[in-house]
Length: 187
Ligand code: IMP
Ligand code: MG
Image (cartoon, rainbow, N blue to C red; front, side, top):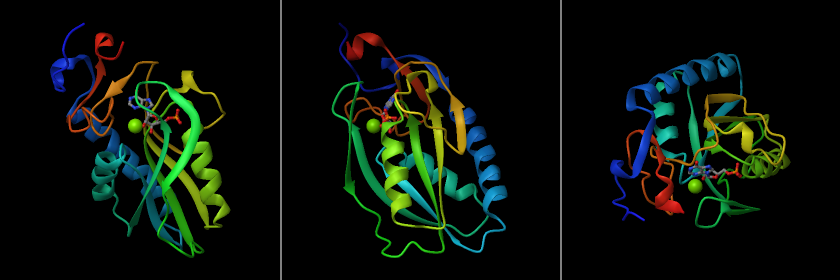
């Protein structure tokens, strides 16, 4: 087993370079603008901490319509690479009355689908005008519950990825690219 350096050297493959991530985000921003530009509601990004932070930050700067943001924290993962299936809300929306509000959940990656099934159901129960989901990455082959995002950056195979917000035990989030972690780091 090799010793982790928590750097790019722990990745065996770059899946998306900084430039490729930028291109994906530019396309998503246009799709989001097209969807919401006629809406009379206020648009609020609901950023899922911590993984979606770099993605949301880059995305909001490219969306040329008025936008607000809120942060929520949900977790389905303990440490390691396997979902526990149990989802908990640790930080709630700070909006008391989401009427006349379009909520756009920003997620880093969809895996089993448990986190977003839970979060969309919860946010819909608060009765906003709409709830949609934008994810940077999607691993459809890993679904345990049926879930389809409204905006999808890229579909990826069943590989554990890190960087651009994505972590393994809180490390690698600050890498500017998205890479596949070497198996020996987590096995
Ligand atoms: P789900 O509830 O199984 O869909 O889990 C989604 C969450 O699992 C994401 O928000 C990530 O925090 C985490 N996750 C899933 N796959 C990966 C991965 O390949 N790398 C890092 N985190 C992941
Ligand atoms: Mg995570």
